[in-house]
Length: 235
Image (tube, rainbow, N blue to C red; front, side, top):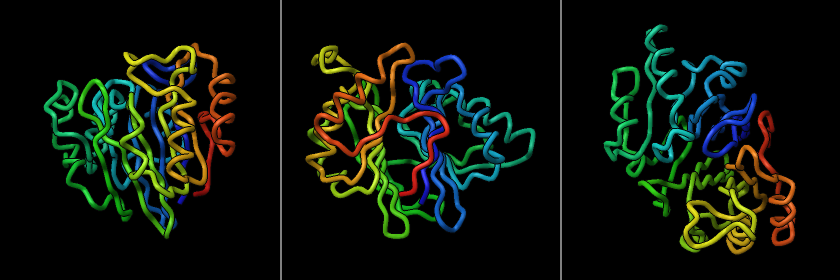
């Protein structure tokens, strides 16, 4: 299993960047796109024909995780293709805009398999209904939190993951109880407590201090990386 970072910005894309989007390739060639935020589609097209995806998984319907589904839908319409789309069925406005025949919309909470990979999900704490996702393939486990502002409820879900992709938006100094995302040190604490093998930090503010986020995480959990577009990790 391979993870390719397409985008990792939070809220809005940085110049020449993209919001949350991760391409997962199984050894048999199947491909799953985890989230499809602003700016993701164009960068995905540099890697593959989006119509050849096995499925798309959306952790929640905020624009920085799902907005490019609107342009992906038009791409599929023009090419007369359809894709399975796993997402929360919360009837949000963005979900309603995606309820067209180009997408075969499925409930992420009920899914057990996607694109030939086993999939598990668990609810996370966020401003709207949101899920963390676990993909299992060829004996390897990848866990992606999506967005969350609490980590304590995720330790058992992440237990022993080979690669853990975690929301890490704030420095320790910036974080407080009202923040909608984790700090990088909280992400690292979760990685340590869950016994994961490798941590990938993501969802960085486009104008934030990524070096400090990574430094603070490494002080807690040494085997971690900062996501950047184009990064490839063999799981």
